[in-house]
Image 1 (cartoon, rainbow, N blue to C red):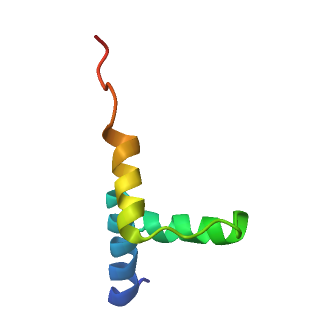
Image 2 (cartoon, rainbow, N blue to C red):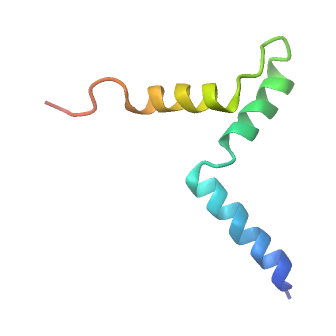
Length: 62
C-alpha cells in the first residue's frame, strides 16, 4: 500500500508534468546527454522560446 508521502510525490509529479513545470529540467537533461556542445539556456530564455513556438503565427483555419 502507498504511504502518504509517496502518494503526495506522485500527485506532485503528475501536476508538474501536466503544467509543464518540469519542461526546463527535462530540456536541460536532454541537452547535456544528446548535445553536450550546446550551451544551456537560462530558464527565462527557455520560457521565451517556448512561448514563441507555442503562440507566434496564425493559429486558426481561416
